[in-house]
Image (cartoon, rainbow, N blue to C red; front, side):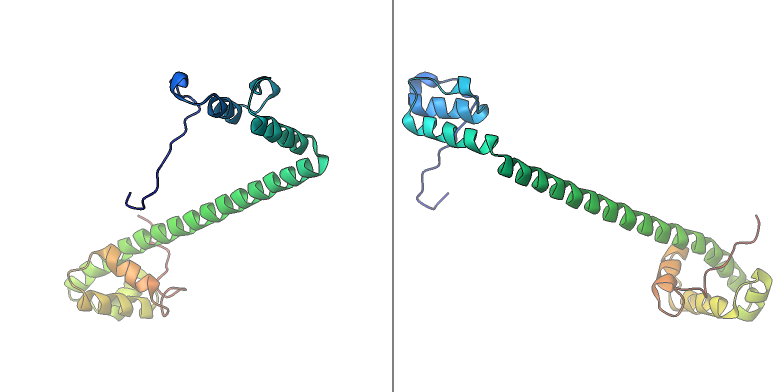
Amino acid sequence: MGDECSKIILNTKGKNEDRVDRALIDFLHYVEKSSDENVPEDCDERLKHLHKKIHQIKMSEEIGVSYMKMEERDRLIRDEGLRRGRAEGKAEGRAEGRAEGESRLIGIIRRKVSRGMGAAEIADLLEIPCAAAEAVTEALMLHPDWTDLQIAEELLSGENLADSDLTTDFPPA
């Protein structure tokens, strides 16, 4: 890796115990399952000391409560993240749905414009605000190569139309 350090990869599931120091083997078994049966009588004193400290920690009520609080905090953080993610997903879904719905209206307006109708006439025919028809016809002229959905997304993202001007109920099919 170019840092002149030796890398050692330890594996608790290793099969070559005859090639590894006994103290390391005992430690790896202990790491896999920290229990009394994984601390042999003839093991290294460091492992015995480690087991004693871990046992004290596990038996400590104060540490247990602290651990439970940490688990609860982590759960709350996870739940909040999920809630926010769902809310963002719903908002994005609504925005996409709104743009797709408005693109249907823009398609109708595009056809009316191609037949020579003006914005005021289109607004009256479709029963939408005149400002919305004007904004759509202007966007169609500025971007004749855009799809209806692209026009809808652009108009809905603009401050002047995002709130209500373009949003209309579609006439019954």
